[in-house]
Image 1 (cartoon, rainbow over the protein chains, first blue to last red):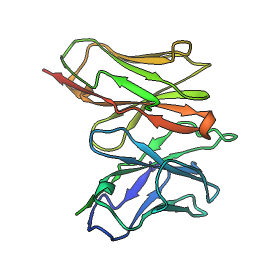
Image 2: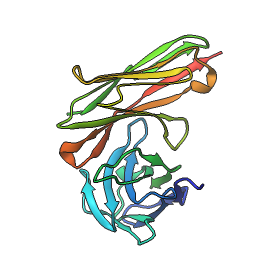
Image 3: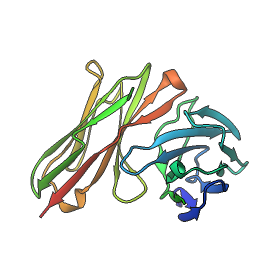
Image 4: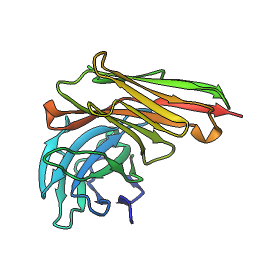
Length: 115
Length: 112
């Protein structure tokens, strides 16, 4: 049973560029949440996708956008990269039960470095 | 302000010691509290505590939830070097659409 998979694992970009991160949820899960984890900090909620719609959004600018596909996989896009976007981006999947997110299962993350 | 506060920020103990990690929270409408262990990248799930399950135990790890005082503790007995990790606490808030808020974590180092 494959867990949550993310790609790429590491990437380096320069300021102003755009990046796309990908996530495949755990088998049987229908909800994908994205988190940003800066060094020495806890994960910060970016947004959550359910039924191909953005259901909830944290305190992140519009430069951060996402998408969920019919197979429940998801992408996170970040435009106009800033140095402060350097972080570990974690994808978490879960199974929605009447709007309850439930237990989060995390992927290994994508380490983004912006130079 | 921070909705989830963990303490201590870091801890160094010797193998065999018992440790207690703290997590206090303040959310609009509590649904659940989760504990995770993060060694390198992916946080791995430890426990979920809710109104209907305020005490959990698995091997040397145990956790309780005090909904009245708004805190939880994670206990690890007979610590081993493999317990060295960052322990994260997350709280789900129904008031903000079931969003999870994470603390900054407690970094535990167990030395032989």
